[in-house]
Image (tube, rainbow, N blue to C red; front, side, top):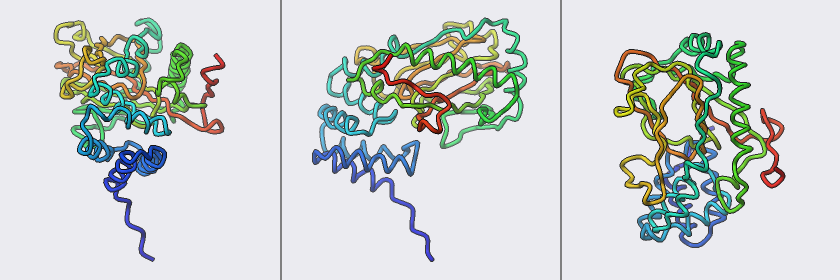
Length: 311
């Protein structure tokens, strides 16, 4: 028996865009959801955006994209598009409501730089690495990763995850209760965590990207070389904000923030927040843990979340 050919994701994306242009947000959202089931990273979502921008002036797309999100297609890709559509429409407040770092970006020490777990953590996270030069499906460039940390059972990693969960749940508890905000309204009933270490050399960096499959993501710094103290060059720093080529800035409603890494520091943000890093430019290593909090059914969740209105 001949296997069915794989779905044409570009064709599905264009069909969803046609439905949305016809005012049929519900079926369009369902079709976009089918695309996401097939391609969780929504790599072909660009075909959907291209057709919308071809059929309508960009400054008229915001109501369509908001209808799509309100109909149930609510995820980092659609939130990113919604913020962009707000900027194209000249509605800087709507863009700000989705991308405000003062409201949604948390940067705080998880513990001090002399914590006794840092040295064994650095040793653990720097082992079992895979090299990534220029992978087509990842933002990392010229660096090393140890994947699937959440499956490891070493005591030092389990203690780290306990701390990261406490920091993440505290962050979620501090989020405002705003049912009109699409990101806050997408709060899942339960969460599971996935994580990997990143070991950086002189040329290692990450291109601007978002995390398309999770609700919240973060980074925890374990080992940081002294060169990061250069505030002018910002070697090894994390930039949170729109990619430079998009032409968005604070005047449009999309601010940027720069984060200087430090041992024990943890940053948390919504997964639709674009971010990138600067190469270290030296042969000393920077070691961090990148992690994602994914929506999960209650029976599969590592942690359950109370509804926002019950807090």
